[in-house]
Length: 163
Image (tube, rainbow, N blue to C red; front, side, top):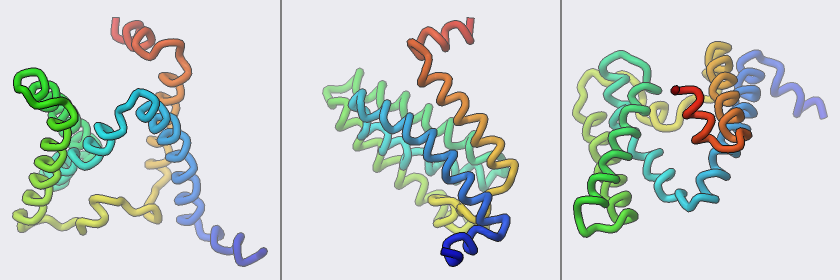
């Protein structure tokens, strides 16, 4: 049994385990919410559609989280515009924008001569590189997810926070 425990002796492995467990809590709650509302395809499309935002954020030297957030907002808005102003159904609009945004991200990464980050690290991250600051950020984000998930109506909670 020592072989199992010895793997978690280094501090970076402990941080990787803690970060992974925190991520499991948040993604389980959000994933359940997405599937129950029939938004699984949109969730998958947004996960790939944020790649141009992340790539531009890394190239321009600001937080990839902000870049991903802006790209997700842009893609969501474009899905609404395309599905409301054309005869294209919403799932078709999601599929088209999903592929388009993913392609745009790949073009940005491949054309940037100064791109110093490895593409796989950009897409998948590095669990062994989790810092204590990352864990703090994850805890805050997970607390927000839990708060929104357990409130009677997330819309009511947001309206109270905003107003």
